[in-house]
Length: 103
Image 1: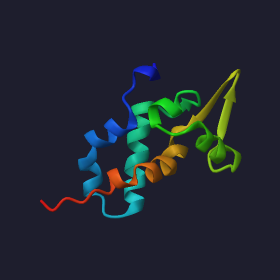
Image 2 (image 1 turned 60 degrees about the horizontal axis):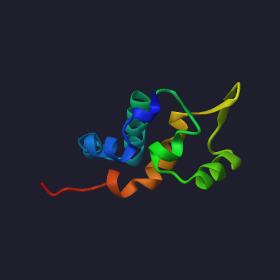
Image 3 (image 1 turned 180 degrees about the vertical axis):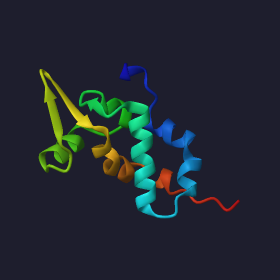
């Protein structure tokens, strides 16, 4: 299901006009959370995160260990709430999201 999903970089580029309308960082974070939840669902398996979000596994493990990202274990699979990834994705793609055009 998620292996056919588009990469987050393409998703952000396709919806760049949404971020242009936002004036503050909090507004951008809320829009990013809604966009990620709409595109990938409320929970995403931890094994898909490195390939879809271009986040290194050791970076993800660091955030999980420092308890900034919470996990949910169901059977043998470990899931992460998509809204918890918002700050991590915002930091990784900050230059793309905060592009300013002079048109």
